[in-house]
Image 1 (cartoon, rainbow, N blue to C red):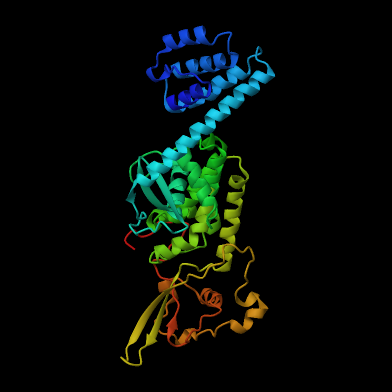
Image 2 (image 1 turned 135 degrees about the vertical axis):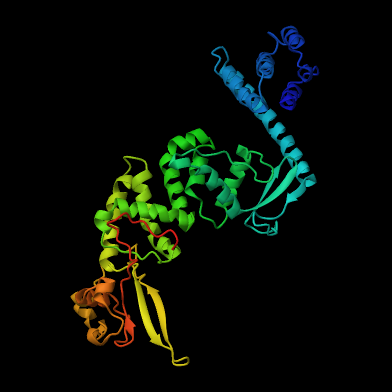
Amino acid sequence: MSSFYNIIQKILGQETNFLNNNDNFNFTNYICINNYNKNIISTYFYFYLLYSFSRYGSAKNKILLKFKELQTILENIFISSQQIEDILTIFSKAQRTYYAFSKLAHIYKFKKAKVVVNTDLNMDEISKTNKNVFTLYQNNSIYYFKVKDLINILNTNLSNSPDFFSDPLVTKNPYNNTILNNTDLYNIYFFIKNTSYVMPELIHGFFLSNFDLDLFNFKYETMIRQFSIKNYIYNSHHDKLFNDFKDMMNEYKKYTFKLKINPSFPKTKLINIMKPYLHLYFLSKYGISGTNENQEAEYSLIKKLQLFIKYNPHFGRMTINFKDNIITGKREQVVNFNDKHINYYKDQIYSVGPTNMSNMSNIPNIPNIANTRHFSSVTYGIGIMSLINSMNTYSNHQIDSNEQIETETEEAYDTDDSYEFDENS
């Protein structure tokens, strides 16, 4: 700030400079002897300099005081309109000169700075000529970032929500742990805006909050929580989500009791199919109470689960097929899992089986139960009519009446119990 004060004194034609030594006493005497009642504009400016410079605080606080003291002078009722215009003219000239020197110093430092990091977070080399590469100048060093890495870093910090309670964090340079100041954040925001990437809602909201974390958290708490929930569902490991899936099925077993999923059903495939339903479940459970999305989430979840089960009530069951290998002459056992499911994003109910007359031609031939070997309705707990109905579900599944047997194993899980799967499966 001393450079700015020196510029003002040069503009006012004053040769004596007391501010470099912070000599407030002699500075005050100089004002009273040489300026008071002689040059009213110089007098006001010198008092403005004295008050702002004598305050203690960081450079940022002194910058704020600079404008605050200027406003105090301009609001003085004893200053005429012409004097206000003269003061603003001098102040504007000082500002232009100060920023010109600041820009020149920045250009010089930038050219002399060394490139510290020229790889992305995956350690792949970055070309500075790439239009999607952002150059961060910090602490006399240069760091290259890909736009997608910057977006991920900002979104991760802004959406920080332990136990789904929004608590956004300040964003730091991951290479030196230095906080990004407002200048860096503004540069990053407008750089993203000028690329082909869509501006993330959280970053845009942070920009509209003037990069004030407290204000951002207050205004966008609902958005932060929704983002954190979605991020948890679609980025967490399937083993972690599997427990949440069991909780959801137990909580809504009134609607899911017909669904029996074999313990050997692949967890990864199961969770990938159920992620949209888990998303609704978490929105209804952890969303901001009273919001439309929170109130509608549970209704939508129940509706979607009903459509899911109605489309294929045998989802998750295991089928065992026996086929003769022509080459080896041996009978081989093939295990398959019923993973047919409705498109989550469509509300239409697709009729299957004989209830839809247009599908009658697709109904497979029913095997001769009497001649089928290895079949036991007692062992597998499945009756003739149940077997026929389950076969009608597979409209595109061709069955060899003599060689293929569909069974419901003893391990098939019933959601009426506790919906706990075999941990060793």
